[in-house]
Length: 239
Image (cartoon, rainbow, N blue to C red; front, side, top):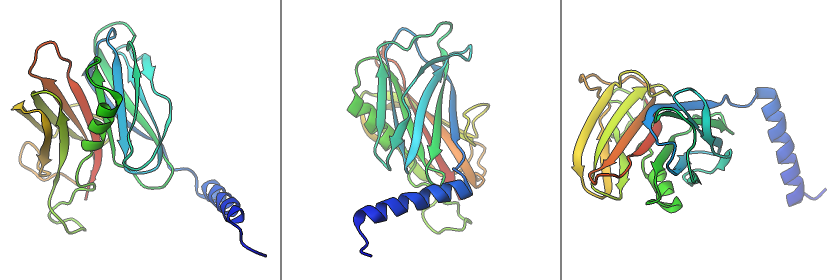
């Protein structure tokens, strides 16, 4: 019997479906960035970028733990960003919000993930997607000096600034940006353009980070008064 392209596709789909049934879908991954100052009355623009094929959705919660906005569930492709916007964030109460990313990997590999969150109308869809693409940690996974893989130690985030700003980077272990960060640094008067923000895998106290997953929040606050901060989140591994 001749092997046609249709037959290959059908049998491949059956094989994938059987494999998922036998071995189960990879567990969802949740990343949370609390304490983001977002104004319920302002427009919101969010972008996301991943290293693999995933289902990805971004949700925003108020300080009262109510969902005030969420994106559709995107089917992401490696290194191709997605974005969504709303004319008004909505919700009530304080400006303190949590942004959560929920990922459902299609393969049993933990993806690298980055998000960009901005309020206002001064950035467009293309710009917010570029921010998310750039800020993914390079390299992922990052290499410790005595780790199993050889390569340069540490890595960097690449931050695209559209205005001169201060940049605060905070890094936590795990998938939740809560409690005291193990690393924190603030740089003032960073010029507009593409800027590397390095991390050599040392904590603020000077110790080496442990192997595992890490989450970073980079808060970019324009020097120009009246401009809202842009929040950049990045999740990556260290080995």
